Each structure stands twice: as C-alpha cells, then as structure tokens.
Length: 62
Ligand SMILES: [Zn+2]
Image (tube, rainbow, N blue to C red; front, side, top):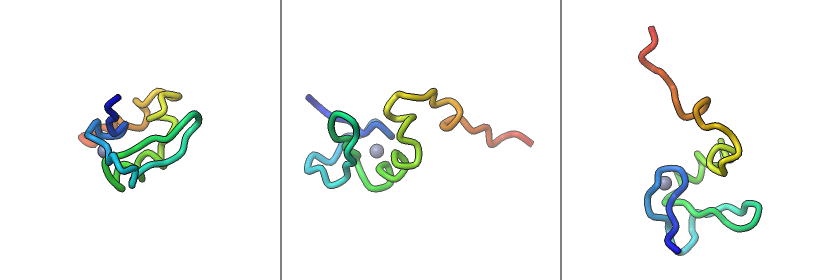
C-alpha cells in the first residue's frame, strides 16, 4: 500500500523519519515541514473536521 503525505499529497519518507503516532497507527510525511503543519491541525488531516476553515484563506480581501 503506497502512502502519501496527508498534507501535500507527495510521497512519504519510507524510512519513517518524519512520522507521528495517531490512533490506530502512524502517519508519515514527506518532510519536516509537513509534519509541523499536521501537528498544528491534526484534526483536519485526520478527516475529523472540515478543512475549509483552516486551509482556505482569502488573502485578496482588502
Ligand atoms: Zn508533504
């Protein structure tokens, strides 16, 4: 089973260098940056919360 970084969708580090334990297993990431993002908003990437409030930011607002 191929694994993909839940944050950016890229290929994970198969060695598990960048991973965090979660309920029922371990989540792997492509790198430290994505791991940090996941730790900030774990509920979003675990599918427990609608991501729209966090991921969509309208920076064009005046
Ligand atoms: Zn990533």
